[in-house]
Length: 427
Ligand SMILES: [Zn+2]
Image 1 (cartoon, rainbow, N blue to C red):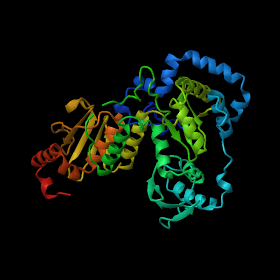
Image 2: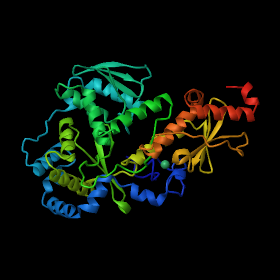
Image 3: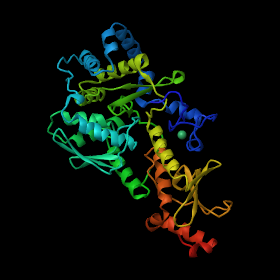
Image 4: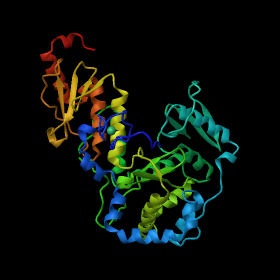
């Protein structure tokens, strides 16, 4: 986690030196800086501070008398003690299983070195070297692990994001269920995609991004919805390091802090169950108030942590724009995207068809004349950055897109009629 470089208030990627705005050039056309200050706070923290101030005060006082717990967090022993105290369940414990004491530790190190070298999301912010020998396969505590570009295939199932070391820790705990399912289940709980149809939306979104299509229907760029009585507790949105999730909290002028959660899988799962309202809402409320105060006391300053759905979505959007800088130009708050069909598309903020918050138009060679805005349905339930990411990915593959969307095909035809030379030099 970098704390020196200035980061964009939205995507949390670094800003160029001597750049005065608080938003990067990718995020700035799409976000109102004032609105963003409100949106920067995770939904659970927002709720807590607005409706449960007494609980915050109470837990602050409680922590003042618990130096031992404060001193032992964020280590597993400290978390276990905290969870015992607030639930009264003395069975909660943490094991002393260590990765580096295991006979297969060298296999873990080998994987980690390669994946860190490839900048995999499983081992973020670590230095490593990809030996360049292609993919490798190892055995770890009876599990079969293969590297596959930026992801890992564990016992035949693919994983691409989340704390990679935690995944190996799971392979040390003898359990009947699949390691990957358990790992993904944790990820979904952390990202708040486990309830309702969010999980399906997530799957759809991945499908959509993979095929370069638009996803169906949709609207909100707001954080997780809050229910009135907190029947569903907003997920503890987290960034992650290689060994665990980092719970983020926003303290306005003091900045953004993260707290590493337990690195032991079963203890982390216990933490999330309690957070999610089991055994009771009261215990869950106390855990959230205590975690907020602990983070304020001993959290790690991390301005680049992404802790809201909006930030994550814009981080994805910016990574796509940055990775395709040869085909995407930023100009006057708009993106100009060169599609393989020969059309340059302009995407800019505006009220588009079906109330989408952007306009998609074909542009003439001199970028002065624009075609009719193309009408496009997308998933308005997704954060704005996700929607923009799928629009941009789609237009980068407009030759495929035109076979699926009549409107796109028609816009390309119209464009070719106005620019007859394009038809012959079809790329
Ligand atoms: Zn940004």
